Image (cartoon, rainbow, N blue to C red; front, side, top):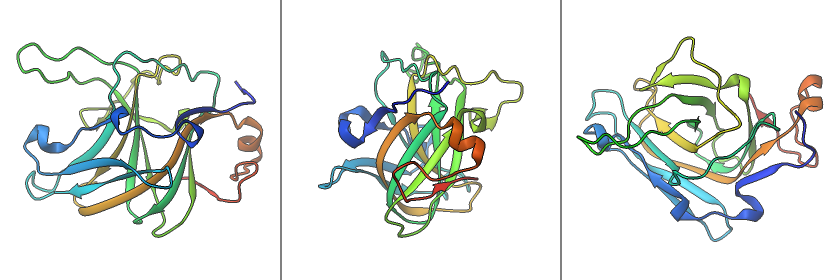
Length: 210
């Protein structure tokens, strides 16, 4: 691995399109949470909404996912994903990738579940800029919200969906949330990672690591 150029996926010079994203909230399970993506005047994306945990007895989630079912991203030449964040609320979020999508169930019309590859990260409240680096090896495979033991690793040659989620973490957080995302891109940082350097070249904002 180790391409010299990063691959812009969303935001940055590519910009954001609200039509590229859609809500995937706990309302599909009878919950009352809601999420939204809006493009701000400064050209960033604001992921926000309300997380309700009472309706589902302490559980709850609100997320936005990419809408396309025909696009496949080959990210195998890179070492992970860099998420550049702006102002936030100090809560915990989850970044999710999928390498498989199934057709909706014929009886219910709902999308069928597949393995998700997740990365949880905490953000500092009111920070103007923060970088989160997601290494492929740190993604946790889950199925229907539970860790999937012995699952295969993410197929980075065939990424089909990106999502960002706010969840309760078993009642630890609830209510209104807001996260500003400047950009999402695939990056190669083999030398920096080996040396333990956690600052992107040309950028003074620190990476967040779990």
